[in-house]
Image (tube, rainbow over all chains, first blue to last red; front, side, top):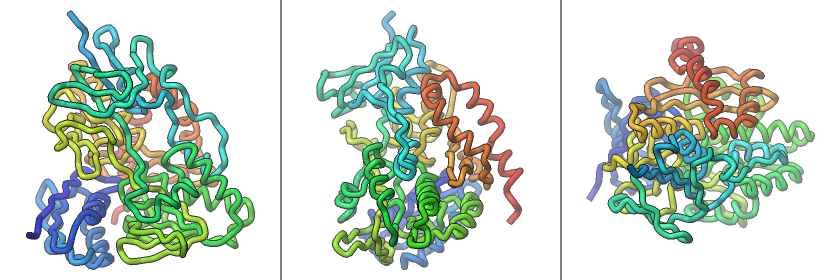
Amino acid sequence: MDTTKIIDSRGAACPGPITDLARAYRNSKVGDILELWATDKGVRADTQAWATKTGNEILDVKEDPEKIVVKIKINKR
Amino acid sequence: MTMKKVLIIGGGGGGLILANHLDTNEYDVTVVDKSDQHFYQPWFLYVAFKGSKRKISKPIGELIKPGVNFVKDEISTINLDEKKAYGSRKGIYDYDYIAIATGTVPDPDVIPGLRQVYEEYGDYHTNVWNSEKLWSHVSKFKGGTIAIGQASPTCKCPPSLLEGAFLLEEHLRKVGLKDKTRIVFFTPFPRAYPAEPMNKVVEPMVRERGIEVMPFFDVDTIDVQNKTITSLEGDSLKYDLPIVVPPCRGTKIKIIPETVQDEDRFIKADKKYMKIAGYDDAFAIGDCNTLPTSKTGVTAHLEAMAVSEIIQGRYAEFNGRINCPFDTAYGKATFVIADYNNPVAPYPPTRVKHMMKMTMARIYWMTLMGTADPIFEQFFKFTRPEKLNKKYATSE
């Protein structure tokens, strides 16, 4: 069964949310859904660049007053 | 009335600063570490790339104030429910409060081929002997491709990775090997420096100095026979000299319940009070915890200061402040400054900041004792990230 894993990177500015995403990627498998929570504004561009590079897919980006939520599907591992 | 027992596991920066800030008339404070030596870790860089012979260790016994106990022992298990820690040599320690400040453990075995590279070439992160080993290779290097970087995103001290590349370039230029060498800096991040505002400051220097950057390069395997590093993202890099900082993990100690640790053995603690999830009498300080901040000396320092207040019944919280010195070589440096509410400021490198970094290395021992606290307070006040961002951040 596919799993959704929440990665809470709120407050992380340096090295930033991409650290937690890359860590989760190492432990993930094809079909997993990763949900990255961040407050760092750079997360949109960085996750997009990361997904393009790694061949994974951004399903959705949502922003509420407290966080930015990026939903990623692991297609390649 | 019997004194409350505070047990501190780990005699690094976080552990000693906590111990030295507790009132020993009120608390029975014990520090336990498997080693009786404390190292000034930021200097590993200068051992590895400048061959520095400076003495960077002191016995822990000389770094604690009178009244604090130090025991050399290796803790194997901590039971948070029974409030007991089990030593391998000297028995069982019970406590009223526990602070775990055990730092990180390098883990070269998680990447095929890395153990061999690590043992042969050393690195500039893990200990002084590995730095000396790396200097023996760097100082004998005659030209070719040097692959330098961190194997995985879980790493201490974010600036130090690029500091290594900068100091390496300076060394090679000085000895006339620059034209015969290709320096390739690989990084799991999207750019040379992970935080974008600081990348804007240092990226032009990286380019100017001819350091090639391979972004999104998370090491998957190292083929030692063919001298090739391959990334999870599918790129490969051939080297003559590999300088690979291994991934790190949390504590080796078995903690009960094990649910307080994540899959890499870092201890889950809340980001303001450093309390271990579910416990009011147990804290995790510094590199060993899961706080969403850099793994660096200053965070361990500020977390320890906050925990000392909390244990002594006063309100305090950690605001996520980082203040990482960043040597950009050729006598200049900057600081990476941010907190939970403010992004990294694009603080430009100067000679004065380099002097500050070097002064910090000299007064480090005072900072452990708490005698440099007033200097820090002033510095932190004048370099608040919101202030720096106002001054240096240009509008997008």
